[in-house]
Length: 395
Image 1 (cartoon, rainbow, N blue to C red):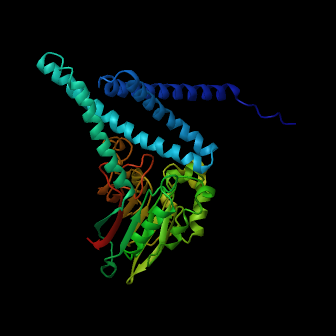
Image 2: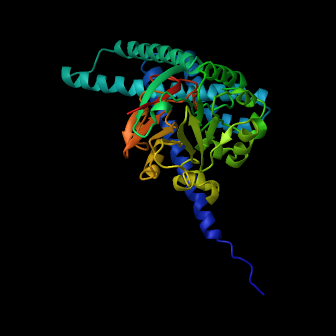
Image 3: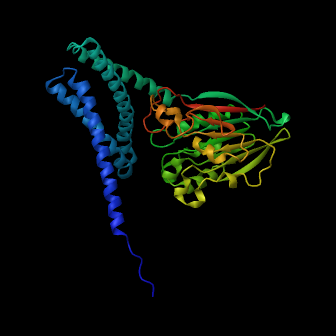
């Protein structure tokens, strides 16, 4: 008789303690940064008495809203959780802006004091605090309007050497990182669908992160997707956010809406007698959901005709390394949001080979989409949302 499997309680306890330690360190760091912002904006502004107490109370309440929103969206009815979610995510964006601007202002102040050899006058503190708050408030209002506004249509011509002359002019309209969820709903998706359909595309490519929530929660919000139209079809690949909320379930839900899911697969389309391969792979980290969800470019292109253009849909730009040597001519990706909020685009480069736009990489073209929606803070400062229209032309 086989002995029962042994449970590694020691390993589980170590993992739990390690996770708890990381959480405590992260929480402590965020607390310290909030105190730094409060010290520089409230303390240095000269506020005293009840006004100062009120300002500090507001700062710590906003800090508390972030973990509270995480709990509220899972434990409270949507009508109660949604206001907390909105406040929390707006604050995450504004906090990032405040931290950036306050840090830069402090650096300038330190350099100025070093140059003049003495501390700046006392009146500088309140003026700096007012200037920082005014600049951040203006940036946040602008970023909110851009994030929630109409995406810009970017028109790009992509030269492809293997494109048949009679197939020239094939137009692929790409949307990516729509992130339908708590703050972007079916009305937003309806506007995107109408904007895409107005372009009369030959092909529509959806390169992942379509949703931020479960199928059960967002089924009604996703219905407008069924109205997307393209001459040769609408094609979709998963992003990392689908796998946070049930990747296999979302593939099936999208398929039921009439969209072709390219799960390590391809289709061949004919445009004016010329052929083009449209292939797609699962997200870079899809393998965490099971080995069948790991991206596999070789499998996606198995049996695809050679000597004709190959367009690969892959959510993350770094998946271009996987496509090397597979005869890909153009990879369409997203994931980066173009950085979404300045200056975070500089940090994206630490993980991804490109942030936005069309570039040559590994011997083929890679187009990195800035995203059609947004994630987290409902703000876009710098990179605006886009719908990309890519036209294939002969090289």
